[in-house]
Amino acid sequence: MRTIIKARWIIAALWIAMAAVLFITAPDMGQLTKEKGQIAVPEGYPSSYANKLLEQMSKDGDTDKSVVVVFQDKQLLPNREAALKKAITILEKDSSLHVSDITSYFDAEEDIQKQLLSKDRTTLLVPVTFDANKISAADFKAKVNEKLKPLKLDYEMTGQPLIDDDVITSSQEGLKKTEYITVGFILIVLILVFRSAVAPFVPLLAVALSYLVSQSVVAYLVEYADFPLSTFTQIFMVAIMFGIGTDYCILLLSRFKEELAHGKDKIEAILTTYKTAGKTVLFSGFAVLIGFTCIGFAEFQLYKSAVAVAVGVAVLILALLTIVPFFMAVLGKVLFWPVRGNIGHPQSKLWETAGRFAFSKPLISLLIVAAVAVPPILMYKGTLSYNNLDEIGDQYESVSAFNTISDKFGPGESLPVTVVLKTSDALDTNDGLIAIEKISRAIEQTNGVSKVRSATRPVGKGLSDLYVKTQANELNKGLESGNKGLKKIKDGLAEASKSIADQKPQIEASGKGINQLIKGTESIKAGISDVEANMRKLKDGTDQSKEGVARAKKEIQAAKKQLTAQVDQLNGQIENYKEISKVLKAALSQAESAQGITADVQKMIEQTNQ
Image 1: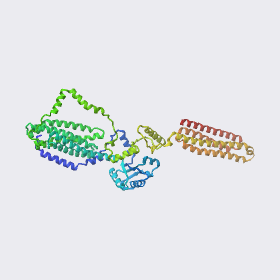
Image 2: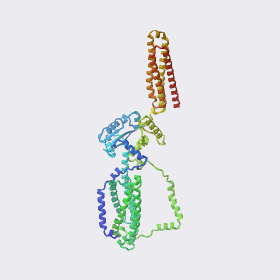
Image 3: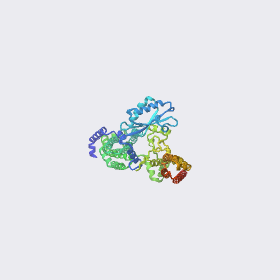
Image 4: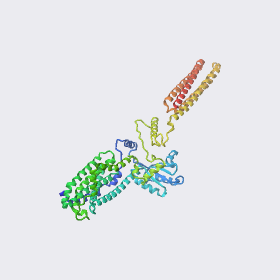
């Protein structure tokens, strides 16, 4: 300590030089907070894994960010329609905005329009996507305000990029308020403690110098060593460093004052102060240093970023051992001006009385403490809030616009929860779409979920084609068409049989009967063609019901093949009436069998619907 006292002017000059160099050359802490201070969930949690999957789904180098422009007016449509169309055109066409996608109410389908215009027709949403690699969220907002100002439309903008930007702005403004309030409050406390116009400024100068230096050191670590950082890092440093720094300085200056009051010169008073109170400060400071260093092992970035306080405490301890002795040695008793003569202070009667009472009546003292402490503890409910927007308030445009969307459309419309599904099989198939719809229904049934949008319900409504009832109706239509075709086959066979019976004498006498028979076979072929056409309709209605449809299709195709073979056989054996008659009867029997199979399929469908 004697060496420090002797070299006090050199040490003070080094501190000032170091602070100046670091302050000038260190990276901007505010800019670093914007770039690297966003609070992220560590790896291993569902949300962080989902974000990785979303990044994999995005195109390489995709830097698009989405925001929502919220237009409001009591008579928005149709009174302001022309201005709105012009505003959307500006957003879409102006190259300086770097807009990559925009959803216009006036160009959208009816289902989409319902999602963009509130029921009372006072609020219109315009989702916009811009390239964040070419323009920042803050600059995009500023340019949009510049471009739309002549239109005199009432609007606000929100979205995750704008909310993040406002959170950082809020933290920076909060930091300034914290600094002013902290300095002011500490100054008042120090004046009350020392009753001096000089002594209160020593702790403030020592701690402020420590804060400036340590903040610059942290900025270098963040820039070049990937040091953890959050929007609360600087606030942590201000609160802790000014708090414990002032406490330690009060202890050191009070002990120095006592030693001076006992008649020691300032050098001896400094040495005695640091031999006694100095050890207490040193050990306490190292305990705080170790504690905040250990916080650096946390996983959550917000807590992990508090490790910067450890850097601040280390610098603060160094300042307490060098800067404070400098002021003690230079100013001596002047530190406690305007107090003159005996600078010692009498024993406090208040604290003496409180101490004697606590020792003499400990139980009563505990009851008094309990009476003060227990009610707040019991009243505390420990309710957690997951609404981060409450931290910055609706004085910011992004929060105000978000609340507008929540009131008019529901809170999930602006920042919906995204569920990411990954499978080894393709999802753009019938089975994949059915799986997506099942998951959508399960999510929809969760408490608090009002609407689910997915591949099967792009506007929040399920596709009716995927429902069993709709599929069954299509199958019924196909089966009805199949029945009509089979009836035509039956009628054609009956007509052929009748023709052969009527024309038997002519068949034996001449070839005229052959022509009649051919007409009958043509009717059969026509019926078969109808079956083929209706089979295609049947397939369209039965693709989603594979088991029942496969059975019906297989049986009907078998009937068709047998009928075709029998007709060919009929043409080849036209001279043999008995053989023809057998073939026709067999064909008729097959047609009736196919019709029976169709009836079985219809019964199966009815049972499925039930």
